[in-house]
Amino acid sequence: MQLSEEYTLPAPRSEVWAALHDADVLRDCIPGCTELEAEGDDTFHASVTTKIGPVKATFKGTVSMSEEQPPESFVLSGEGKGGVAGFAKGHARIFLDEHPEGTLLRYEVEVKLGGKLAQLGSRLIASTSRKLSAQFFDNFAARFETAEG
Image (tube, rainbow, N blue to C red; front, side, top):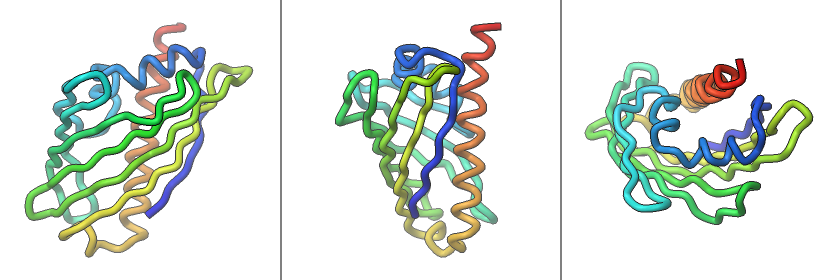
């Protein structure tokens, strides 16, 4: 499954870049994230609980950053196992562009699911993925709005 989206964030590109590399910020913004601990400069251990349709699972795994071109782009890759629910893995290419209102963040995501999750309908998975993504970016943007106001 592939998704792409863009958001305008009310902050300079350098601040958005720094926040996207801050474990505390990411943990607070990722829906269902209960743990996100740094394991070096570019890798995090994560635990996220989510529900897609009738399947609720806690995924434990790793998230890593690569192909970094500060402060313009990087690739965020992750994979996690959710027990009998299955597994999820994927990568997102993230682009940050300067914008009159702050920073334009664009991303392109590719996700693969296995186990019970893979048996759910693609429309349900896509709509849940979009919803979780929107929640993350709403939370993320709110951090900058609070900082300014």
